[in-house]
Amino acid sequence: MSTQAWSWIHKWSSLVCTVFMLLLCLTGLPLIFHEEIEHLSGVVEAPPMPAGTPNASMDQIAQTALERRPGEVIRYMFWDQDEHPDITYVSMASAVDAPPEENNAVVIDSRTAKVLDEPATDEGFMYVMLKLHTDMFAGLPGMLFLGAMGLLMVVAIVSGVVLYYPFMRRLKFGALRTQRSTRVKWLDWHNLLGIVTVVWLLVVGITGSINTLNRVVLSLWQMDQMAEMTAPFRGLPPVTQPAHLEDSIRTARAAVPDMAVSLVAFPGTMFSSPHHYTFFMKGNTPVTSRLLKPALVDATNGELTDTREMPWYVKTLFLSQPLHFGDYGGLPLKILWAVLDLFAIVVLGSGLYLWLRKPKAATAAKPLADDAAETANALRQSDRQEAAQ
Amino acid sequence: MNKTSEPRGARTENLQSAGEVFRMPIWLGVASVVGLVSALLGDGVWDGVSWLAIFAPIGAVWWAWRGRGG
Image (cartoon, rainbow over all chains, first blue to last red; front, side, top):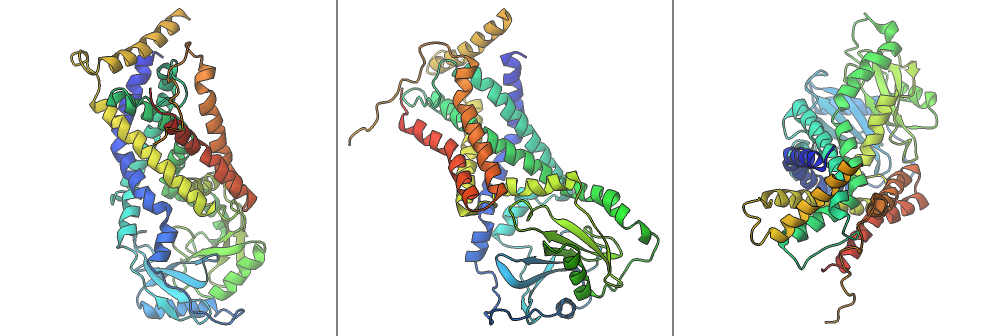
């Protein structure tokens, strides 16, 4: 392909996705630090109690939640062993098949089964940032659209790398010509910041696009492995009064002894079957804590039905999460993530500027001549070489 | 005010090959991959390696900025 063709690809793939990528980079910046920000803005903590205070029965905790929000059902419970070891988070909704966005949170002390808080989950700065970042308040279509924009950015990056070559053949790596026109200065910044962030931005872009497929991946898993595991239950009436939660969690722990329960999906939710609790078990290394393993327990009697490794496509989704969030290497990694995110913003902004201030044949006469000649030279040189080959 | 570094000449003597143009970007890309993977493999030392490696592209920008001019 000629340099002109690559240039055309770079221009149009970038132009289409730039506005959305700017939105994602800007909203992503506070999201990198969501744990720290939530911490500072005062999330509820469990009151101190003597070490080793035993936990209340899970059935009692579930009962507390149901009494707190009468008429609602529990869809999920989850735990954050590292940050809040004594808290059970309960996610409730008006019905088990209510829209996935419905999330009425009840925060319960795991030891006393007392309600600690009922935080609003659909308001505040971080909520708006998260919604803008994941689906722009447009639901699944918005999410898939952003995924497509992410792939377009991958096209822009690849074509940008190809174009880096003709532009840099006469320039040393890291050249920042600040004494010449504004356009040359921003061209050099665009090239430098673009080329050093290639790998990071590709990884964050591709894993972000994979993350937008989470509901698709979930449905695939439901039709594939979940259907296989729950085949004997097909045709049975769905469980509407799940019980034996404490027995069930013990069953799950016994079935996967080396992992901890991080989430339980109640019968009838997206993450489970109509007849089962699905316990998602996590390991204690950075990788195994992301590669959750499901254990299905019959919600009518607390007996194990099956536990299996997730299929490759779910594992891909799980591993895409840390690589997109940058939350797997402590605060220093988050800071590096933020700096690279700022670099990406400059690449996007300078790219936009370079397009707006494009040297046109008509205007190339006076101040831009210098730079226009530079660009034209770069393009001509590489094409001549291609023709010669 | 004392200037600590003379601006390097931005241009090269000769037309560079693809190998020359991409030498530094490839090293920085390798560092990025090492950094991204390392923190996934473990905590402690693995995190430290990750921070250093992912700092490489940022350090390169800092170095280029110090030598700006031309």
